[in-house]
Amino acid sequence: MSTQFENINLDSEPGGIRWLTVNRPRQLNALSRETLEEMQAALVEIAADQEARVLLLTGAGDKAFIAGADISQFSGTGALEARDMGHLGQSVAYALEQLTVPVIAVVNGFALGGGCELAMACDWIIAAEKAKFGQPEINLGLIPGFGGTQRLMRRVGKARAAELCMTGRMLDAKEAQRIGLANQVYDAEALSEEAGALARSLSEKAPIALKFIKQVLRDGENMSLENGCTLEAELFALCFTTED
Image 1 (tube, rainbow, N blue to C red):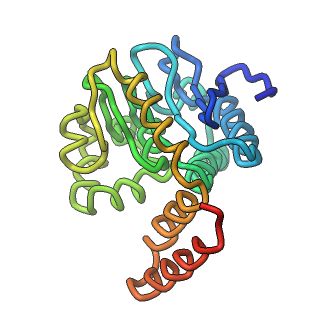
Image 2: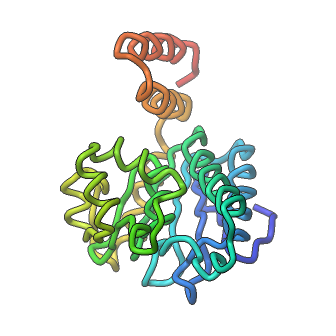
């Protein structure tokens, strides 16, 4: 990885493992416009990386994964600027979903607002016991803008998404796991090691089959059962054309 960034780090480990770290710990890794633009550029780079096998998304420091959008940039923002910001955040989330490699959110602290939204755009979430999740935009007189209403509803159901978005309350990691938002919860000191072990395990799997699994899960979610199964059968057949 050769590109230099100011607000994020993009690092490589052997086996095609890539780490994308939001690196604004003093701001609890809040998502400024510049940070989102750098993430967008980094995801283009990862998508073109033929050696990449797994992406881990996390935040710097020990307090926050991503504590939401940088509200210091909201002062004086009009509707058109806000819409552009929402579209930018949604494009980053969409880019995470569209990567052909597995993407794991490694939630080491607060995952609020835009942070929760980007975590939900990953294939699954692992979290430290101290992690907190939530969509607190209602407390600022706003609604989620980076796809939170839609992805949360798809993950935990409409009624629970309504509760969380309308009350703005935070979930601890165990509740997030119980309702299906987070997959695994670990002691904070073990989170990075567990993330690395998971990434190494995935990097050893058949890469084309992993790509097809991600594709059929992503695309099939918005298909009828019949059409989803048809897509599955086509990709199942294509697996027989690979060396794996």
